[in-house]
Length: 319
Image 1 (spheres, helix red, strand yellow):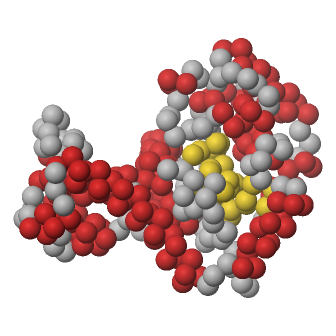
Image 2 (tube, helix red, strand yellow):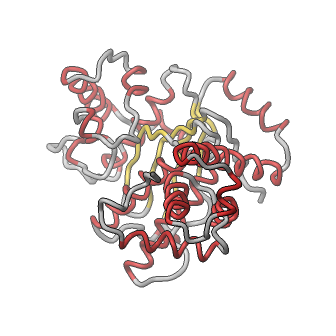
């Protein structure tokens, strides 16, 4: 059976879902869940993703995310492999954690209500799974973005974007009154839900009007081959990495030639390597080649040693 086409473009919004291998749990306890959310935040930092909603269940997860840089595939590859490695290391396990390819539904973000529908679907997952008694509010389920939506902005993760959902509900301000209105909306949806309105999310490949669907089909039919598409994804990540590289070279008063002239263990080069690894999804091989750090394993080991630096030295600043 042919694989589902992965359409990527700047500003695309996706509902992403994946299950545990053989439907087994992907979380054993709350520490696993905390590590999952932490890895998700790291992925957002690396890729510039904007998260609109997420929900962690026992054996699967849901995300609603926006990709300003057309990098869903590269970002998901890093995110899933990173969480899997950390899970396996903690529980002394090996092998696959997730089941096959993740599902990605493309969502119309034009403000016509489709983003609101998919965010409601994600946030209502604990209700459908009967994890919340009737007397408990949705905010009592800790492992979704819904409790974060109801907090003041300063208390939310920076990578969680709430304004789009507020806009689709015509809530003008992210204020105490606005958040109360937001909560009332979803509690009412909870009471009215019959599940029928969400069939297109469970079974479809896109969620939007007919014009949106036809535009996606046209894009799919004219898309270049998979090898070319993979190259485009790499260039997107490299574009961000080169911007960071140039910023730091300007701070140092260096040129690209200075990178080659300096020792492969130069602490300023190693700190720059750490920033690139933290804030982008480029590979160790790319970083080691661009910064002239020798082999990629040498670059990785030098960055790992930075963890032992005193706090006042352990910064991205290169001066």
